[in-house]
Amino acid sequence: MFKLIISCGLLFVSSSLHAEMNTKIYGYIDGYWEKVEDTPRIGNSGKNKNPSEFDTPHVHALVMSSKDSYKAFFNLSAGDQQKDALEVRNAWVEKELLSDKLSFRIGKLYRQFGLYNEILDAVPTYIGIEPPEMFDPNHLLLTRTTNAMLHGKTNMGPEEQLSYSITTGNDERKTDAQSLGVNVHYTLGANWKLGASYYTSGGRAVSDQQGFEKTVGSGAVLNWMLHDTYDVSGVYLQYTDAKWIVQIESFQSNHKAVRDATVVTSLCADPNVSLNARQRARFNCGGAVNTNGDYQVSTSYLRTGYVIPLTEGSLTPYFQYDIYENEETIWQTDFGGDNEAGLSDNGRFAKATVGAVYRPDFNVALKLDYSQHMQDVNDKENNYGEVRFSFSYIWSL
Amino acid sequence: MKKSVLFLLLLSHLSFAKTEYSVIINRRLQMDSISKLDLKSVFSARKTNLNGTKVQLILPSATDPVVVTFLKSIGLSSGEFDRIWLEKALSGQAHMPAKKGSSYEVISTVGYTLGGIGIIPKTDEDKMTEMVKILDIH
Image (tube, rainbow over all chains, first blue to last red; front, side):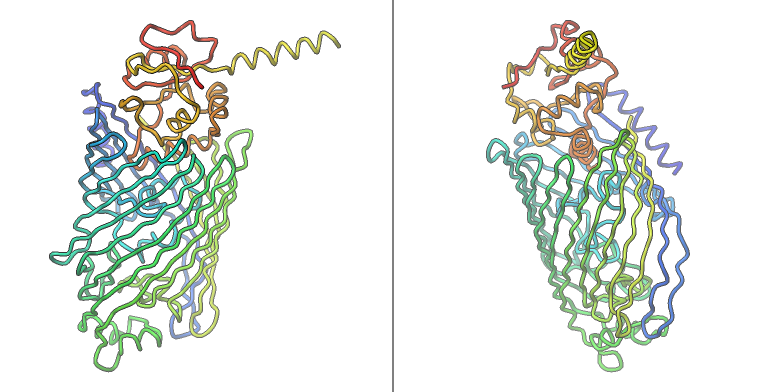
């Protein structure tokens, strides 16, 4: 945290020295509390106790500077998830090549992908506390960051606009793979946005947490894969006006993967690893490991909110419904699992959330919601609930 | 009774006059008029250049009655406006509109910002300097 404050101070001083540049510093802090009901276990009818937890998942300082056709952006994070270490989430420079129509960005950047990838850190601005399941860090569809992007937008009519981007970077590549991401969306007025995203690993990819007894990696490749060649594709639709926010996304990924027999043997043999019958059969535990790790992931969600203006600020009740299916992942995150799909008998779960955001002012958001996780565990429907509260504040210099 | 009606009419006229707005721009932008559609595109961050110059919005405050009236006239609520620009700023896509405490500050900031575009109450047009001009909306 101390490093974050010092960095902000230095950046502010440097921005003051260059008055001809337009440099702004933004930041936000998100205090968070959650209580998860007792959760089912694989293999027996016992339940895991989950104490309530306080967290500061989002402590961000953002610096944006622009001059003429150049722009630079930092996104520094010091949330609890990084154990108070300073993490550079984004650091990029950009050059406008052809006005709004084409710009080139390079560094460490969030790719344009679906509705949320670029804005996921900006928690105070959206409805809901948790990201859609496709951006849950325990089962990402792809890495959130990449290294280079060409992007732009062009008018297609008085109110219609087409935005486009292509991205590439190191991502999770093993050797000479070259990833490619494409995103296109069409906006009609300030209300409608319709888009599609596609990504290919462009060859063999590996997890940055490859191996046994490792936590989940930063991309889509599971820890027990020797390598994985995969693609992700999907579509999204958003409608917003002064009252309504409606968002729908649906994505699917196809993995051509090869399992690491040594790691899978350890997963099968270790008594601390809980695998259900379907997972043991997929891995062929007890026999020669099945190294064919081809699988698919699919996920969809609906999010909707209705803004009620108040004398001071606004109240936005919201509803969200997520579906996620991944037949390959396992339960425990300590071994690279996702704690959700890997817990269920068939690798599938749904999550329904109701909640509300109260915004007394544009820079403050208080959110409270409840989610019900629905899945089959040990051959029966085994649901559990979760309550969350988040209080975020945005500031700027 | 008659006096009360007159008083109410006068009051509503005064409050209407207070929320009438003028859109001002930096004179170097070399524009005389803009369509409501283009204005909406600029204020909803879909259009970031005017005449090849990067636009910078300069406002009293998104909750100022003049700005609320202006935003309503182009089909945006102040909540939508705040959400759009916060999203853009926090993801590095655009700067937040600069917020100024008075019409004097809006006028002077627009005056020294190439690409500056601002909103002031119509009643403050007499405070304008030669660095800025009023944009006709059609």
